[in-house]
Length: 214
Image (cartoon, rainbow, N blue to C red; front, side):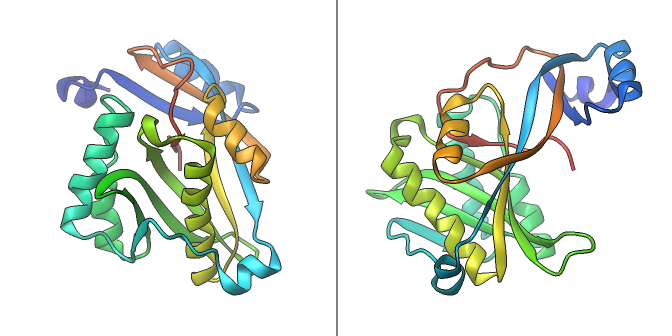
């Protein structure tokens, strides 16, 4: 905490399991407040999607993070998420070469991104594409535009031999939650989101996928 304060961090956030009261007690004593729930959501790929993928026309798909992807992600974050900046995550994709970066382009303007990781769950033979962070500039958050964007997730998932897609959604972000539910995503677990410092936004008027925990 001391390090984060020295770095000027205004909000410290974390996720913890609601069935662990010891954790909740500890974080509450440290000054953290409950900010809502983080929904674990998942959608299985249909047989057709798994075999052929879903074509997305206005999106550039990069296999690994190029240096220019960092500036594009930073720009989208600045226009959609205020002070939150996920661009540094791109360095980890480039370093470990196990992630995928999707960059949404509309009329030569970068309006969205997604950082995804294919992974195999313990004791299971199938892989899942985890969308760790994603955002779209508010002016491009129409249902059709979001649908084109999330369809590109399916394409990447099928290329990576993943049987499904998972993402975490803040319970108060109704735009994102309703959009995912309408596309067939279901809630299968949840964590308690806690924060210390600057309050969280109760409702975020943009498409936003975030993951505060491991």
